[in-house]
Image: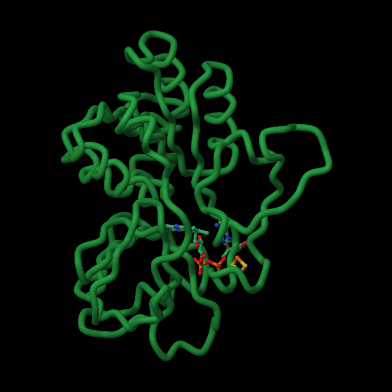
Length: 266
Ligand SMILES: Cc1cc2nc3c(=O)[nH]c(=O)nc-3n(C[C@H](O)[C@H](O)[C@H](O)COP(=O)(O)OP(=O)(O)OC[C@H]3O[C@@H](n4cnc5c(N)ncnc54)[C@H](O)[C@@H]3O)c2cc1C
Ligand code: FES
């Protein structure tokens, strides 16, 4: 984990409330798919806490993020211009287990909901680069809630799009084509599902995976204060594969954000 000052290369609006920012870092940082960072415009006094964002793309000394403004922290980030500085703590969290895809030849099904997509983009790129059989399912409320869809499509793997209102792709929830394809063709060796998005979507994806006997990994987006295990703001209830109490808690920032779906008390 490094506490660095990144310099903004661009910070552009993609859609209403969605932005894409790229930061040049003062030194090279190794980043694994699924890891995240804590960001705050340099010198910002209020709000004091950094905001957690998945690392959407990482080059040797630059990182990119895609963010949806919900409140004051990320709203402040939209005002940072090219050449200005952002405090960035990274890389944080764990990564996705991929041996079942890269070594055992299972198909990778990536299920993104809205701004959950940045947490899956590096994974998609890594798996495609390794020649894996990758399919992306990308759902949003409207056509404006599909951030960086064009970047997923540019990877060359099949991308199925859904929107709740039918303004892009198939009308309905993203879980519908996922379920349909799993029934029709799970691939010769079976599938592994990776998902990030709204909590009910991930819960449903986890349930579909369990019904079909597919492994499933979820990337959780809990509220965070520190991002590195000190404040205990980000705990989730886990059951270690057993759905009987007593449950216990794990920190999303250090034990996650990626967990096996069956470990979470949904
Ligand atoms: C590991 C991780 C990765 C993440 N990756 C991304 C990402 O790539 N892009 C992105 O846009 N967001 C991501 N998030 C979520 C992001 O951190 C929050 O949405 C962000 O902190 C909101 O900041 P804000 O200043 O806009 O709103 P705040 O001022 O923090 O909050 C405004 C309102 O939004 C609610 N809120 C805060 N956080 C969340 C949340 N996670 N889900 C739902 N409601 C929330 C608050 O309760 C409050 O009502 C990630 C979170 C985690 C933990
Ligand atoms: S955010 Fe502080 S312990 Fe996880």
